[in-house]
Image 1: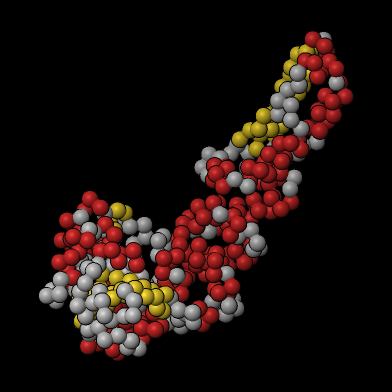
Image 2: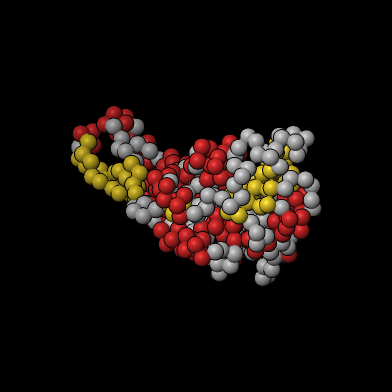
Length: 379
Protein backbone atom coordinates (compact mmCIF):
# COMPACT_ATOMS: atom_id res chain seq x y z
CA UNK A 1 0.00 0.00 0.00
CA UNK A 2 1.20 3.53 -0.83
CA UNK A 3 1.04 6.63 1.27
CA UNK A 4 -0.22 10.03 0.04
CA UNK A 5 3.39 11.27 0.04
CA UNK A 6 4.48 8.46 -2.28
CA UNK A 7 1.74 9.14 -4.81
CA UNK A 8 2.19 12.90 -4.55
CA UNK A 9 5.83 12.35 -5.47
CA UNK A 10 4.70 10.13 -8.35
CA UNK A 11 2.45 12.92 -9.65
CA UNK A 12 5.37 15.36 -9.54
CA UNK A 13 7.61 12.92 -11.42
CA UNK A 14 4.97 12.43 -14.09
CA UNK A 15 5.02 16.17 -14.72
CA UNK A 16 8.73 15.99 -15.53
CA UNK A 17 8.03 13.58 -18.40
CA UNK A 18 7.19 15.24 -21.73
CA UNK A 19 5.29 12.13 -22.79
CA UNK A 20 3.21 12.18 -19.62
CA UNK A 21 2.49 15.89 -19.98
CA UNK A 22 1.30 15.32 -23.51
CA UNK A 23 -0.82 12.37 -22.44
CA UNK A 24 -2.38 14.12 -19.45
CA UNK A 25 -3.03 17.46 -21.14
CA UNK A 26 -4.22 15.96 -24.41
CA UNK A 27 -7.74 14.91 -25.27
CA UNK A 28 -9.01 12.29 -22.86
CA UNK A 29 -6.16 12.78 -20.40
CA UNK A 30 -8.50 13.16 -17.42
CA UNK A 31 -9.62 11.54 -15.27
CA UNK A 32 -6.85 9.09 -14.39
CA UNK A 33 -6.35 6.97 -11.31
CA UNK A 34 -3.34 5.98 -9.25
CA UNK A 35 -3.47 2.70 -7.36
CA UNK A 36 -3.03 2.99 -3.60
CA UNK A 37 -3.06 -0.72 -2.95
CA UNK A 38 -4.41 -2.57 0.08
CA UNK A 39 -2.57 -3.94 3.13
CA UNK A 40 -1.81 -7.63 3.38
CA UNK A 41 -3.58 -9.70 6.06
CA UNK A 42 -0.33 -10.00 8.02
CA UNK A 43 0.08 -6.23 8.20
CA UNK A 44 -3.53 -5.83 9.33
CA UNK A 45 -3.00 -8.44 12.05
CA UNK A 46 0.48 -7.48 13.24
CA UNK A 47 0.76 -3.73 12.60
CA UNK A 48 -2.58 -2.15 13.52
CA UNK A 49 -1.00 1.27 14.17
CA UNK A 50 0.42 1.31 10.65
CA UNK A 51 -3.09 0.71 9.32
CA UNK A 52 -4.58 3.46 11.51
CA UNK A 53 -1.90 5.95 10.35
CA UNK A 54 -2.46 4.95 6.71
CA UNK A 55 -6.20 5.52 6.93
CA UNK A 56 -5.76 8.82 8.77
CA UNK A 57 -3.27 10.08 6.16
CA UNK A 58 -5.59 9.36 3.23
CA UNK A 59 -8.55 11.00 5.00
CA UNK A 60 -6.61 14.29 4.96
CA UNK A 61 -6.12 14.29 1.18
CA UNK A 62 -8.28 17.03 -0.31
CA UNK A 63 -7.14 17.03 -3.96
CA UNK A 64 -8.89 14.72 -6.36
CA UNK A 65 -11.07 11.89 -5.09
CA UNK A 66 -9.93 9.06 -2.87
CA UNK A 67 -11.87 5.88 -3.67
CA UNK A 68 -12.71 3.78 -0.60
CA UNK A 69 -13.84 0.17 -0.66
CA UNK A 70 -14.85 -2.27 2.06
CA UNK A 71 -12.45 -5.17 2.52
CA UNK A 72 -12.97 -8.16 4.83
CA UNK A 73 -10.12 -9.40 7.06
CA UNK A 74 -10.33 -12.46 9.30
CA UNK A 75 -8.10 -10.75 11.90
CA UNK A 76 -10.68 -7.98 12.26
CA UNK A 77 -13.67 -10.28 12.21
CA UNK A 78 -15.36 -8.17 9.57
CA UNK A 79 -14.93 -5.44 6.94
CA UNK A 80 -12.95 -2.21 6.99
CA UNK A 81 -13.12 0.77 4.58
CA UNK A 82 -9.78 1.14 2.83
CA UNK A 83 -8.49 3.66 0.25
CA UNK A 84 -7.79 1.76 -3.00
CA UNK A 85 -7.41 4.41 -5.71
CA UNK A 86 -6.77 8.11 -6.05
CA UNK A 87 -8.60 9.70 -8.99
CA UNK A 88 -7.36 12.97 -10.54
CA UNK A 89 -10.01 14.61 -12.73
CA UNK A 90 -8.39 17.86 -13.91
CA UNK A 91 -5.11 19.68 -14.33
CA UNK A 92 -5.93 21.75 -11.26
CA UNK A 93 -6.32 18.58 -9.20
CA UNK A 94 -3.00 17.38 -10.62
CA UNK A 95 -1.38 20.63 -9.53
CA UNK A 96 -2.91 20.50 -6.05
CA UNK A 97 -2.18 16.80 -5.65
CA UNK A 98 1.55 17.19 -6.23
CA UNK A 99 2.04 19.10 -2.96
CA UNK A 100 4.99 20.75 -4.73
CA UNK A 101 4.65 24.50 -5.12
CA UNK A 102 6.96 24.87 -8.13
CA UNK A 103 5.41 21.96 -10.03
CA UNK A 104 1.91 23.21 -9.24
CA UNK A 105 2.81 26.66 -10.58
CA UNK A 106 4.23 25.17 -13.78
CA UNK A 107 1.10 23.10 -14.35
CA UNK A 108 -1.18 26.10 -13.85
CA UNK A 109 0.98 28.27 -16.11
CA UNK A 110 0.98 25.71 -18.92
CA UNK A 111 -2.76 25.11 -18.66
CA UNK A 112 -3.34 28.86 -18.95
CA UNK A 113 -1.01 29.11 -21.96
CA UNK A 114 -2.68 26.21 -23.74
CA UNK A 115 -6.04 27.87 -23.23
CA UNK A 116 -4.82 31.18 -24.66
CA UNK A 117 -2.07 30.40 -27.19
CA UNK A 118 -2.69 29.44 -30.83
CA UNK A 119 -2.73 25.70 -31.44
CA UNK A 120 0.53 25.67 -33.41
CA UNK A 121 2.50 26.42 -30.22
CA UNK A 122 0.90 23.75 -28.02
CA UNK A 123 3.17 20.83 -28.83
CA UNK A 124 6.31 22.87 -28.17
CA UNK A 125 4.99 24.27 -24.89
CA UNK A 126 4.13 20.78 -23.68
CA UNK A 127 7.25 19.09 -25.03
CA UNK A 128 9.92 21.61 -23.98
CA UNK A 129 8.91 23.15 -20.70
CA UNK A 130 12.54 24.13 -20.03
CA UNK A 131 12.03 26.88 -22.63
CA UNK A 132 9.44 28.76 -20.60
CA UNK A 133 9.63 27.78 -16.90
CA UNK A 134 11.95 30.69 -16.07
CA UNK A 135 9.38 33.23 -17.29
CA UNK A 136 6.32 34.53 -15.52
CA UNK A 137 2.92 34.26 -17.17
CA UNK A 138 2.87 37.91 -18.23
CA UNK A 139 6.15 37.61 -20.13
CA UNK A 140 5.02 34.38 -21.76
CA UNK A 141 1.89 36.09 -22.99
CA UNK A 142 4.05 38.86 -24.44
CA UNK A 143 6.32 36.32 -26.14
CA UNK A 144 3.42 34.54 -27.81
CA UNK A 145 1.85 37.81 -28.91
CA UNK A 146 5.16 38.96 -30.38
CA UNK A 147 5.59 35.67 -32.27
CA UNK A 148 2.12 36.09 -33.74
CA UNK A 149 3.15 39.50 -35.11
CA UNK A 150 6.57 38.48 -36.45
CA UNK A 151 6.48 37.30 -40.06
CA UNK A 152 9.14 36.44 -42.65
CA UNK A 153 11.01 39.57 -43.69
CA UNK A 154 9.00 41.87 -41.41
CA UNK A 155 12.07 43.80 -40.22
CA UNK A 156 12.79 44.96 -43.79
CA UNK A 157 16.51 45.34 -43.20
CA UNK A 158 16.29 47.14 -39.86
CA UNK A 159 17.92 45.70 -36.71
CA UNK A 160 15.83 43.49 -34.45
CA UNK A 161 15.68 46.17 -31.78
CA UNK A 162 14.16 48.61 -34.26
CA UNK A 163 11.10 46.45 -34.87
CA UNK A 164 8.13 48.18 -33.21
CA UNK A 165 6.70 46.23 -30.27
CA UNK A 166 3.97 48.03 -28.40
CA UNK A 167 4.78 48.38 -24.71
CA UNK A 168 7.99 46.33 -24.87
CA UNK A 169 11.60 47.45 -24.75
CA UNK A 170 13.84 47.54 -27.82
CA UNK A 171 15.90 44.54 -26.71
CA UNK A 172 12.93 42.22 -26.15
CA UNK A 173 13.51 40.04 -29.22
CA UNK A 174 17.27 39.83 -28.68
CA UNK A 175 16.88 39.08 -24.97
CA UNK A 176 14.42 36.26 -25.59
CA UNK A 177 15.76 35.04 -28.93
CA UNK A 178 16.00 31.35 -27.88
CA UNK A 179 12.33 30.93 -27.04
CA UNK A 180 11.22 33.27 -29.85
CA UNK A 181 13.22 31.22 -32.36
CA UNK A 182 11.67 28.01 -31.03
CA UNK A 183 8.13 29.41 -31.14
CA UNK A 184 8.57 30.77 -34.66
CA UNK A 185 9.99 27.42 -35.79
CA UNK A 186 6.74 25.82 -34.63
CA UNK A 187 4.75 28.38 -36.60
CA UNK A 188 6.99 28.14 -39.68
CA UNK A 189 8.47 24.61 -39.57
CA UNK A 190 11.89 24.25 -41.13
CA UNK A 191 12.21 27.96 -41.93
CA UNK A 192 13.61 29.73 -38.90
CA UNK A 193 16.45 27.66 -37.48
CA UNK A 194 17.89 26.88 -40.89
CA UNK A 195 18.03 30.54 -41.89
CA UNK A 196 18.73 32.10 -38.51
CA UNK A 197 16.41 34.48 -36.71
CA UNK A 198 17.75 37.68 -38.28
CA UNK A 199 17.68 36.23 -41.77
CA UNK A 200 14.17 34.85 -41.34
CA UNK A 201 12.85 38.19 -40.11
CA UNK A 202 14.81 40.16 -42.69
CA UNK A 203 16.75 41.99 -39.97
CA UNK A 204 20.26 43.31 -40.27
CA UNK A 205 22.71 41.16 -38.40
CA UNK A 206 25.85 42.80 -37.04
CA UNK A 207 27.52 39.41 -36.77
CA UNK A 208 26.26 38.38 -40.18
CA UNK A 209 24.54 35.33 -41.61
CA UNK A 210 27.22 32.93 -42.77
CA UNK A 211 26.84 31.28 -46.15
CA UNK A 212 28.97 28.92 -48.23
CA UNK A 213 30.81 30.03 -51.36
CA UNK A 214 31.76 27.29 -53.83
CA UNK A 215 34.27 27.97 -56.60
CA UNK A 216 32.90 26.03 -59.59
CA UNK A 217 35.59 27.48 -61.85
CA UNK A 218 38.55 26.40 -59.73
CA UNK A 219 40.41 29.67 -59.93
CA UNK A 220 38.10 32.29 -58.44
CA UNK A 221 38.78 31.73 -54.73
CA UNK A 222 41.89 30.77 -52.73
CA UNK A 223 40.08 27.57 -51.71
CA UNK A 224 37.40 25.42 -53.40
CA UNK A 225 34.94 26.39 -50.66
CA UNK A 226 34.89 29.32 -48.26
CA UNK A 227 32.62 30.86 -45.64
CA UNK A 228 31.45 34.46 -45.85
CA UNK A 229 28.76 36.66 -44.37
CA UNK A 230 25.96 37.90 -46.57
CA UNK A 231 26.95 41.42 -45.55
CA UNK A 232 30.30 40.77 -47.27
CA UNK A 233 28.50 40.17 -50.57
CA UNK A 234 27.08 43.67 -50.88
CA UNK A 235 30.33 44.88 -52.46
CA UNK A 236 32.04 43.18 -55.38
CA UNK A 237 34.51 40.56 -54.17
CA UNK A 238 34.85 38.27 -57.20
CA UNK A 239 35.60 38.38 -60.90
CA UNK A 240 33.10 35.56 -61.55
CA UNK A 241 30.71 36.52 -64.32
CA UNK A 242 28.11 33.89 -63.36
CA UNK A 243 26.59 33.69 -59.88
CA UNK A 244 24.37 30.77 -58.86
CA UNK A 245 22.30 31.38 -55.71
CA UNK A 246 21.20 28.13 -54.04
CA UNK A 247 18.64 28.23 -51.22
CA UNK A 248 20.02 25.30 -49.20
CA UNK A 249 23.63 24.64 -48.35
CA UNK A 250 23.23 20.83 -48.45
CA UNK A 251 22.92 20.95 -52.24
CA UNK A 252 26.63 21.40 -52.90
CA UNK A 253 27.00 17.79 -54.12
CA UNK A 254 24.40 18.45 -56.84
CA UNK A 255 26.46 21.23 -58.42
CA UNK A 256 28.99 20.49 -61.17
CA UNK A 257 32.60 20.08 -60.10
CA UNK A 258 33.67 22.43 -62.86
CA UNK A 259 31.82 25.28 -64.54
CA UNK A 260 33.95 28.09 -66.00
CA UNK A 261 33.77 31.53 -64.41
CA UNK A 262 31.00 30.47 -62.02
CA UNK A 263 30.61 31.00 -58.28
CA UNK A 264 27.85 29.39 -56.22
CA UNK A 265 26.38 31.02 -53.10
CA UNK A 266 24.69 28.38 -50.94
CA UNK A 267 22.54 28.60 -47.83
CA UNK A 268 21.31 32.18 -47.97
CA UNK A 269 17.71 31.08 -47.38
CA UNK A 270 15.53 34.09 -46.72
CA UNK A 271 18.53 36.40 -46.27
CA UNK A 272 18.45 37.91 -49.76
CA UNK A 273 18.84 41.64 -49.29
CA UNK A 274 22.45 41.36 -50.42
CA UNK A 275 21.17 40.50 -53.91
CA UNK A 276 20.28 44.17 -54.36
CA UNK A 277 24.03 44.85 -54.71
CA UNK A 278 24.90 46.97 -57.72
CA UNK A 279 27.71 44.66 -58.87
CA UNK A 280 25.25 41.84 -59.58
CA UNK A 281 23.49 43.84 -62.28
CA UNK A 282 26.05 43.00 -64.96
CA UNK A 283 26.51 39.35 -63.97
CA UNK A 284 24.65 36.32 -65.22
CA UNK A 285 22.54 35.42 -62.21
CA UNK A 286 20.73 32.16 -61.45
CA UNK A 287 18.47 31.21 -58.56
CA UNK A 288 17.67 27.66 -57.48
CA UNK A 289 15.37 27.02 -54.54
CA UNK A 290 12.95 24.43 -53.23
CA UNK A 291 9.90 23.90 -55.41
CA UNK A 292 7.39 25.19 -52.89
CA UNK A 293 5.66 28.47 -52.12
CA UNK A 294 8.62 29.67 -50.05
CA UNK A 295 11.13 28.90 -52.78
CA UNK A 296 9.08 30.81 -55.34
CA UNK A 297 8.66 33.67 -52.89
CA UNK A 298 12.44 33.86 -52.51
CA UNK A 299 12.84 33.81 -56.28
CA UNK A 300 10.40 36.72 -56.45
CA UNK A 301 12.47 38.63 -53.88
CA UNK A 302 15.65 38.20 -55.89
CA UNK A 303 13.88 39.19 -59.10
CA UNK A 304 12.60 42.40 -57.54
CA UNK A 305 16.23 43.31 -56.83
CA UNK A 306 17.67 41.80 -60.03
CA UNK A 307 15.03 41.45 -62.77
CA UNK A 308 17.42 39.51 -65.01
CA UNK A 309 17.74 36.55 -62.61
CA UNK A 310 17.13 33.15 -64.21
CA UNK A 311 15.36 30.42 -62.20
CA UNK A 312 16.75 26.90 -62.31
CA UNK A 313 14.61 23.75 -62.03
CA UNK A 314 11.64 25.67 -60.62
CA UNK A 315 8.92 24.68 -63.08
CA UNK A 316 5.76 22.59 -63.12
CA UNK A 317 7.51 20.12 -65.42
CA UNK A 318 10.24 19.47 -62.84
CA UNK A 319 7.58 19.05 -60.16
CA UNK A 320 5.62 16.56 -62.26
CA UNK A 321 8.74 14.56 -63.10
CA UNK A 322 9.55 14.19 -59.40
CA UNK A 323 6.01 13.97 -58.02
CA UNK A 324 6.86 10.78 -56.11
CA UNK A 325 9.31 12.80 -54.00
CA UNK A 326 6.92 15.65 -53.23
CA UNK A 327 5.74 16.02 -49.65
CA UNK A 328 3.25 18.19 -47.82
CA UNK A 329 4.45 21.75 -47.24
CA UNK A 330 3.85 22.31 -43.49
CA UNK A 331 3.13 26.05 -43.63
CA UNK A 332 2.67 27.49 -47.13
CA UNK A 333 3.86 31.04 -47.68
CA UNK A 334 1.08 33.61 -47.68
CA UNK A 335 2.02 36.33 -50.13
CA UNK A 336 0.24 39.67 -50.17
CA UNK A 337 1.13 39.90 -53.83
CA UNK A 338 3.01 37.89 -56.41
CA UNK A 339 5.22 40.71 -57.64
CA UNK A 340 8.37 39.28 -59.13
CA UNK A 341 6.77 36.09 -60.48
CA UNK A 342 6.03 35.45 -64.13
CA UNK A 343 2.51 34.29 -65.08
CA UNK A 344 3.75 30.67 -65.25
CA UNK A 345 5.46 30.96 -61.87
CA UNK A 346 2.38 32.61 -60.41
CA UNK A 347 0.26 29.70 -61.61
CA UNK A 348 2.76 27.24 -60.11
CA UNK A 349 2.76 29.15 -56.81
CA UNK A 350 -1.04 28.98 -56.68
CA UNK A 351 -1.00 25.27 -57.50
CA UNK A 352 1.60 24.49 -54.82
CA UNK A 353 -0.25 26.60 -52.27
CA UNK A 354 -3.64 25.01 -52.92
CA UNK A 355 -2.21 21.47 -52.82
CA UNK A 356 0.34 22.25 -50.04
CA UNK A 357 3.05 20.55 -52.08
CA UNK A 358 6.77 20.77 -51.57
CA UNK A 359 9.62 19.32 -53.63
CA UNK A 360 12.89 19.89 -51.82
CA UNK A 361 16.05 20.53 -53.80
CA UNK A 362 17.86 17.62 -52.22
CA UNK A 363 15.56 15.13 -53.99
CA UNK A 364 16.87 16.10 -57.44
CA UNK A 365 19.73 13.86 -58.52
CA UNK A 366 23.08 15.32 -59.62
CA UNK A 367 22.52 13.66 -63.01
CA UNK A 368 19.20 15.50 -63.41
CA UNK A 369 20.75 18.81 -62.32
CA UNK A 370 23.85 18.59 -64.53
CA UNK A 371 22.32 19.85 -67.83
CA UNK A 372 21.01 22.98 -66.10
CA UNK A 373 24.56 23.94 -65.17
CA UNK A 374 26.13 23.20 -68.55
CA UNK A 375 28.29 26.17 -69.67
CA UNK A 376 26.36 26.62 -72.90
CA UNK A 377 23.00 26.73 -71.05
CA UNK A 378 22.08 30.35 -70.55
CA UNK A 379 18.29 29.99 -70.70
